[in-house]
Image (cartoon, rainbow, N blue to C red; front, side, top):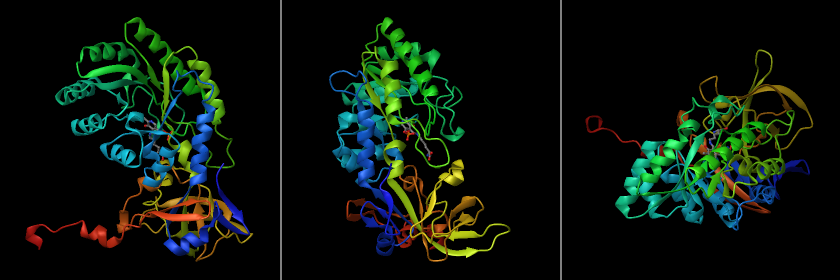
Length: 424
Ligand code: LLP
């Protein structure tokens, strides 16, 4: 559910007409709804109300990569969420936005020694390690700082998540985690490393999952592993079940499993684990809370359907080009007519296509359109390809709106380059 609704013929974000935002800030522009973000954080927390997770309850660490805007992070910090970070940059963003370092977990296969030291100095809650060499490096960095690093190993359960290949992470051929059969060895090795305090297990098999079965298979394997590890004398007190729950993009497709159904499955599978559960939802919290608003530059005749050329492009919203992702495209002020069209951006490649043969609201040059479900993996994946400025971002809360990221002016982009002495 989201807070982008037609009111008197104009799509609003909460109480603010999107036409007003487009006028004030220009297009393309990302717009986020506070109410939707807050609602999703609460729905997810409520869905986990029945899991058995020790005195403090489950820890929800929002996956910062989905949308790292400071306003989004600050909104979620107020809801009591922690953060799942994958770089020193995300770590600093989470801390500056007010997230409690104790609620921060550091994931990723390529943490550098500098990033480890930064995270140790901020006393983050947990490192999710993805290899034995990484464990060795972290132990050395921690020892040099005179501290002990709280760690879990991310386990690769070799489960097919049934999602797009580019966002599947839990198969043995993927770069992520420690192979299930190597886990015993990795935990034994980590126990010998003086800079580490081993406390948990972690798993994340992929993103935009539309079926609970692969998650249940993976979690069941993790439950068995916890029992083995305990039998080998390891004190396992946390289990991080990652993120991955899908959201609806295309209203014509069946709805993905609800957070409540996910929560019930987790409660059932983990009932006797005796650990604190951790979660890393990203998309579920923010995807439906964002829309990319763009203006139609012109409509050009096509071989069959017309080309609607909008002022947003693949550099602003990469998901269709990268994953063939489907985003609903709606007129902000619908003309009560529909047509079949190809929606494209101005970038000079055919991959700059948002939709082909799409049956949608009829639009004309100058009209505004919204690319829906664009709060996750959207603005954050933007680039300046074709020397296009990075898109502005706006947050709405009731009838308030604020620019939460200025449009980076093209002058700033040009100024970042410099000439070598021989060309000056
Ligand atoms: N935890 C880990 C270790 C992850 O790698 C990810 C996402 C998450 C949590 C959050 O997953 P979520 O709940 O958002 O599904 N750019 C792609 C998605 C990449 C996901 C990467 N990892 C897209 O636009 O679909």
